[in-house]
Amino acid sequence: MAKKILKDKKDFRVYLKRIEYEDAIGVQRWGNFDNPWMEGYNYGFFTEAEVRYWYSTITGPRKRYFAVRRKEDDLFIGFLGLKNYNTLAKTAKLGIVFDADFVSLGYGYEAMQILLDYFFDDIKFKELYLDVNDFNIRALRLYQKLGFKVYDHTLEVFENQKIDPDFTYFEVHKGIIYTKITKMKIRKEYR
Image 1 (tube, rainbow, N blue to C red):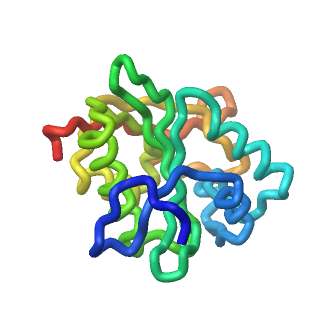
Image 2: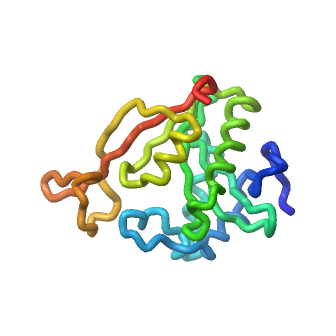
């Protein structure tokens, strides 16, 4: 089994380790989401060159990315990223992606609990931020369950301009589709 670098929770089905290229290449075996709104989370179509490029973007300065691996078979099923990693302010921004075949099974909740323990207890950071698409109800529920609080809302240009927008979650301005984003944060005392 690969070296575990974050605390192991014995009753959890996953562990986290710093992501390495050998982990990253595993995204090519991932399942993909059918929903065109989730297209930006489909890593299973990546070519080897795309994996190399993606890996180079997550291993730069001010970033800490972790592979989520299932204990029973050591399968790489997701990743969590600490972006905008600021050791002076003790803050970071969360990124999270899971293989479509492993969502809604509780793995994300377990992985996030491990990450939050590491974030607040081990490296003693103060605040973790995230942005989530309003259409990603599953993710919003996870973050609320973990103790994240909403602090703002915004719009961002949506990466897939070919969708048929549902105006509950999207807006169109001058022919450009924008996704509604909820901004959330967590501090240790929120948990």
